[in-house]
Image 1: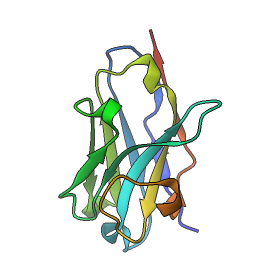
Image 2: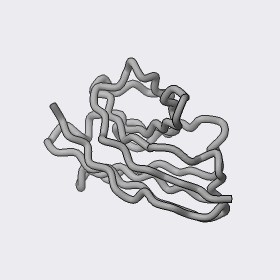
Image 3: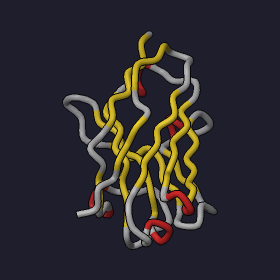
Image 4: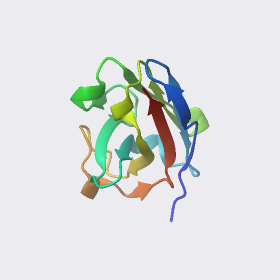
Length: 125
């Protein structure tokens, strides 16, 4: 099982910024679509953002467009999620994900092959 390691969560005031990082082992990282999901208590996990294997295409849920930005560095096996203008409704556990089939588009949970352990993001009002 591939271990995706996330870091960068924390507590921030509304309007602030946080950056999440995800690293993965192995040589095949550069071939995967990478993404982020989030979950709040009582809700299902929801898609947040995804980036194609080359980094040439990115996808976002509507509520984060223009505020969140996903990027990747294949040389470092790292995917990043820069979150700006954070709102209390962005609070949740954020999971880094990988899709080995390199799907180009917003990810559904069934497409995800690997999940990170999750990192808490809390936005206070």
